[in-house]
Image 1 (tube, rainbow, N blue to C red):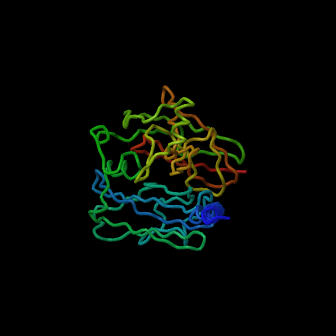
Image 2 (cartoon, rainbow, N blue to C red; image 1 turned 90 degrees about the horizontal axis):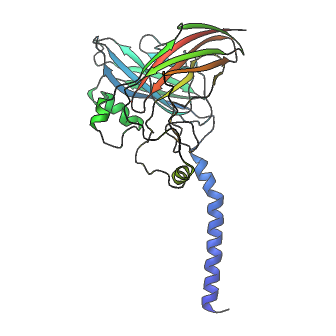
Length: 312
């Protein structure tokens, strides 16, 4: 065998070995910081905004490090605020991954320079979020739209600055009754100003879909598809809640096939002509539940809650 053929053979063998190693190690690397369950949750202080009556709203969210596990953590030693009242209306059910601007806590006008601390302990790991009225944490609509991915990095426009949050009304009583396994109907009406403009139509051609699959977007910040949608989810409660038909996810599920505005192929759903959405909710266990409705136009959102007392 000549020097050149020997060198080529060695190089080919090395390349084959390197490819085999990469094929073996790559899935392990990909899974190294990705978990289905068993991980902790990072509570997050998103910022504050003033209210017309002189009070202030502290805005919180969280990062659930799991892709599938949705922990339930009752208000108590593992889920509390301090100082003062430990129950400030925080969730006890936690959806997967990043959930920004998930809820607000109102504090009085004389709050001053004090801290409000949210402590959360999940899967043996305790984390805290510290809220203050420092000027650096002041939030307005443009900050919300930017942080959630509605805008490009550092961009704005007259359209985005004039956007207002959707209006959402849950028709019927704020307190309902239900039985385990028997669905109840939730009727929700949404109105919106049509801003920001929808980035994608509600349907798409096979060619366009294939093109987006083969050319995933390149982003330096989180990206979100603008389009009005409604989402219903469990906020508190002892068992699971099934919403039918399934609605878009309000959390940042970035997987290609995810039913989430952060998914690469997500399309905004069709909007009913009268703005009225009807779904059912079915409960797996008896107890007191709080259900959370969010209307989101891509840039801004509005939340509503109802309580359901579920019996056997």
